[in-house]
Each structure stands twice: as C-alpha cells, then as structure tokens.
Image (cartoon, rainbow, N blue to C red):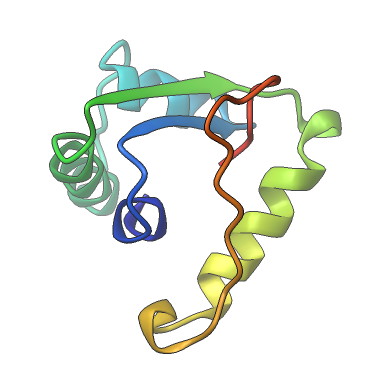
Length: 98
C-alpha cells in the first residue's frame, strides 16, 4: 500500500489469499493479538490516503502475481531510492492485482 501510494495510485484494488486478513481489514472480524491490532491500524491509516480502497480475497492457487509483488515489496527496504518501472494504464481493461 505504501508503494502504491508513493507512486501516485489513488484508487487501489488489493488482493489477499487470507480470509482472516480480508475480513479484519473490512472490519467484519476483530483483531485480538497486539501485533495484528497495530498492523490493522497501519492499514487504516494508509486506506485514508486513497480515494477508493478495496480488498478482495483471492484463492491461494490464483495468487502467483500477489506473491511476486509481496516478495518485491518485502525485498525493498526503501523503494524510493531504487528504479522500478511502472506502466500507467489510463483505463484498465482487467483488474490489476496489487
């Protein structure tokens, strides 16, 4: 979410293969562990920076793109100092996984 915001994305469609995470972010489930409560607060703070934010549960077997993106994001401590090519599509023809 930080990378998407820093690159100028304002509507954001996110996918997760975790039903628990999706339901907690949507507010349908409550987080009980302290580390998850802190994580969800960060998500809420980031959500406020987007004009529109939606998270969708994606079956694990269909999650290859999301896995690749999460590995990219976790491997970049400060992505702003690195060169990442981003292609802007004025009108998306199919949903893009983030």
